[in-house]
Amino acid sequence: MSTDSAVAREAAWLAQTGDGLPSLLSPPGPWQNVQPYWPRTPATNQSGIYVTRSRLAAAKPAAQRIRPGYAFRLKMTWPLVGVSAPVFETAQQEFDEAVHLLVIRIVGPPGDKSHGGRFLSAGETPGRPPEVTVEFEDPEECLARYSQLRASATYSVDDYETSG
Image (cartoon, rainbow, N blue to C red; front, top):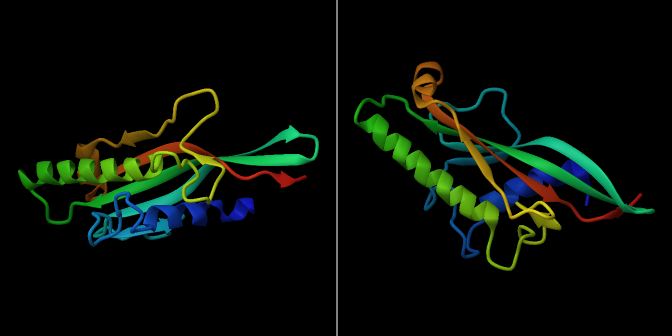
């Protein structure tokens, strides 16, 4: 597998349906858009998950083998167009619920940490328990600046080894 396809492979995993994990895309899921890379002009009236990469590392576990590893950063947006109190609080709760479904999908089904065979392992770091970290931006600032809630999730992925 090529390192330049990693972001697209992960976006495909997140958009997948019918595998027993939560469906993220609407309907029946809460997200309207799952795509690789951050767009130049993201829609402010759609919920979205944008798969980006914050790190690429190429480990050499053996003399002729290379195992690429990535740190994915998912940027998430949740629209607040025309939202007022107490609907603002409801929107924050819905965003929390949608993020929860995303984390379940990242962690994956029991016994499969490869995101359906797309990677060697995902959401795991050798020697540590699986880890997905979600950072929520301040909702007051998000409302004032973007008219949408925002958060980002980070986790590690190891790709299949290749000859080097």
